[in-house]
Length: 591
Image 1 (cartoon, helix red, strand yellow):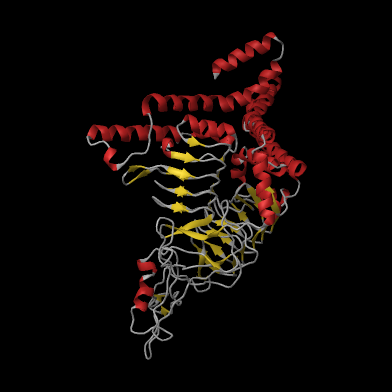
Image 2: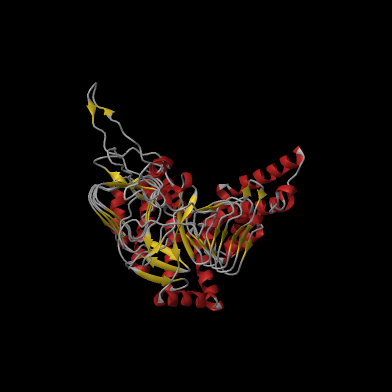
């Protein structure tokens, strides 16, 4: 990098165009080292690591040296791909052909014109991505299973959204959608057009099969037409690649401006004054970056409005440019999180934020976000208002009412509402269209009610039912314990899409909690001794179709399929409660 800068300076000095050197300096500093590091990783992969390709149990090395060498190769490549410089090279080129080309160099099989983000994987040779696939951010792929390395394949048009985890041998069928936080267990198969999300007991929850209406189908056809149009596709890529090269070095431009002004001050008033001026100048440089983001948002995008926007449209282009620009402001925004300044920034960007809010989360489409008074959004909580499915960006408002709390890494999907005083526990996902009643605690992937805040339940895993005898309060006096949930989670099913039932895997014995099983084995069931019907667990991401039984939970409101980071919006609002079962025999007390 130093050699490149020296050569550039000599050429610019000869032609009296030193200004060109200062313009190109930040991009060279930003991308130069990362590019060299990525090139070194590729060379190391070709010469030392070799191909980490699928193997059967019989093909695994039998000697200790062979096993040790395989482990060393995998470890070496994993260390290289986890480095910060590796991500610095890939992150700016999300959604472009440059990123696809980089993954091909590492050994992954990447199809034609895919829309992928930087994802975590060590065994690149085991990854197969077919044409027209959409792969979102923070996806992890683990190709090493119990019997060795197994391929993970995403079939044509598959959608794998943010924070998904794909285990060895997992396959995602054509146009299938894995919503935010979906777990694909080892050997799992997601059939074409299916929509799945989250996990319950290590098994994904299937919501429904896709059935797009005429308007959605027209938007998908528009996106595919633009995808297959060479001029539109490569023009779109050219703009994004140029923006990645010259916008992502914004922090380096800020540093260059700070040093230039402070150097000038040192020459005029002494080095001590110049050094003392650095913090103030750096502060104003960061405020200038935030102001630039505000100006670009209102001039280029304006106000975000609810609707469906196909890929490769003007909205998609501005959306991607704003993502690149916002990505350069992470350090600045991290310094503001948890302060009143963060709430002010949200308001300037168009969000409705009440008084005395503590905000540590992520937001993007601010105009569609509403946060009530005295609300708390924890670290890296997702309150973005967009979802993605089959190359369609869908914007839906998100509402957090007053006194609500989102604990760290939780997600409120677009179209969902947290009621007054409600709490969403850590690593939980509230699906699109959900309405959490006031003063309730919800948890899980997907989230379900754990009870009222005024009568907090004992929580074991995801709201497991516990028999409470009583708790000691203040010395020897006993306080009456709040009544436990009858059967807590697991959920057998939720009603979705016009009456179709969603199949939910059961994490416990025979699809029932220990309490529900004990009740079912009792001498009599409520209602004449009929055995309670519960759904069987999913097998490899699929239900035992002929044997699966469903229990409707909640009202008839429609719940949509899950999309990027969250889920697809239903036409109505609904509340999903855990299935509650109670077995009573004459003269006995129900547990």
